Length: 209
Image 1 (tube, one colour):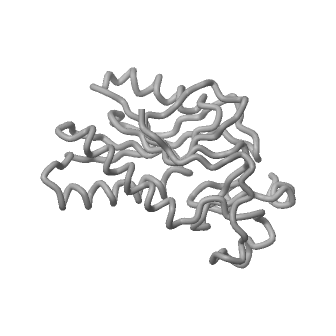
Image 2: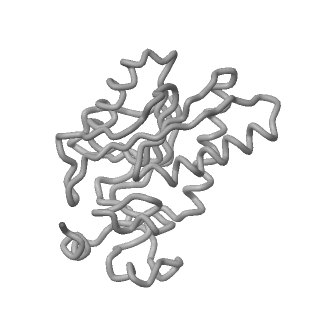
């Protein structure tokens, strides 16, 4: 099992004034919990681990939309760079699938699956919370009989609601707070934020549908 970076439950994050945050979101965030530079460095290391483990296999990298797109794109870029600059490289094709399991700030029990024609090896997901969404997707993937399935997730939440599911590769283990930014959204807002931030209670009301 691989190690990951743990953000403590009592972490207050970093003061917003220390970072560049879009002006229209300044009142909606409590703090920056993972700055974008740290996300990039951790993603680069995950790419290295994946190339080392999967070398020799053809990877079909499956991006879970919408929240996973930024992490997926950066991860693919790092894998591509490693392919170009090292003796060991992995053939890579990509596909996309959309899973919807949230309403406002609540993870729902129903998971909608949209798209994904050629499902195989590696799935890139942004955040694993209860694990139920991922378990639904893995069942679907296994019906296609891939040689192997590995899951990489940027974030895993420590939450009593967890099913116990753990991805194969984890970027950060984070507290049970509602996080936005780096393509993670709240009702489609905050995807355009570079850092991962803690959403304020006020913003949950403001952007509620």
